[in-house]
Amino acid sequence: MNNDIVIIGGGASALMLASLLPGKSATIVEHNGRLGAKIMVSGGGKCNLTNARMGTEYFRGDKNFIHPVLKKFNEKSLLRWLERGFLEPVLRKETQYFCKDSAKELMDVFLRESRKQQILTNEKVLKVSKKNGFFHVETDQKVLTAKALVVASGGLSFPQLGASSTGYEIAEHFGHSIVKTAPALVGFTVQKEQFFFKELSGISTDVEIKVGEEVCKGSLLFAHKGVSGPAVLDASLYWEKGKIEIDFLPAFSWENVQFSKKRISSFLPLPKRLTKAFLVQFNLDDKTGMELNSSELFLLKTLNHYSFAPAGTFGYSKAEVTKGGVCTDEVDAATMMSKKVEGLYFTGEVLDVTGRLGGYNFQWAFSSAYVCARGIKKNMKEQ
Image (cartoon, rainbow, N blue to C red; front, side, top):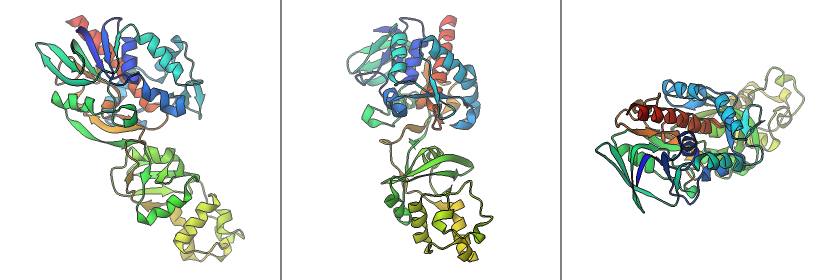
């Protein structure tokens, strides 16, 4: 089968690209039985589309690569495009845009816009090659031939939804470097010294987590495996190995503690079960502030910089995204085309660009697809 463009993947970036390309110019190849499986489960089924606060500071990756892509199609551009498709996102959590009722609203827009292209589902890509200026995409059912090939196959997170390493394998086949991949936006498991965290499962508290030079703010949730919650998930984006530092009392002042007649479990603004667990670890009685000596006060103040090394993460099955991926030094930010192979493009999560929680990864998927669509159209005009 001859095609102008073959898009490998059927997720957010692939669907956005198919929607933006001219009709009957592209073929989507998706190995799942349906498109947009990850879209449907994201954001608790409501899909966090983007964020009113947008910038390279919310992403892990080369800022010089990310900036021009976001600039060409930012959150305002996305909202306008969605509104033209009769989807009006709602603002929640101050800055985060979600579908009003469910992610199906976004999928309805994509399915309506992308049906002008050919869509192949339940079709697995086995091999990709290039010969005489054409890409040959061999699936388990046929061979597709195209002038342009777009790898929009996502990362390794959510293997239960069919995530695979196909995109990385194709990139490597064509000589691209892969920055080491790992689960991201995921909880941390703990080592023996923090096993008491597991006994606090279900407790949540606001914290600030420092990982290297990055500070992640938000809630921390104690879980059966260790710790999770928004602040932890963001921290996992930057953690490789070694220690992280948690401020369990980010807005607390110690100024008048030594004059307080209240007990520790009352004056510390933490859930009581959590405070008492720390007192056990510190071997401290639940005494009043007035009864604390200087060494005991020093111990309590370590809650502002509680340091420990996670044992690892909850893994890809619990991760929202994959960090690492196709090295962006080898991709043109103006078109998303490979600098190594003419007509080969990469968009979305397969690239070494990962955003924090809050709609940033969907925005990247959409922005990179927009830039790719422009790049493909420009390239085809010049041929």
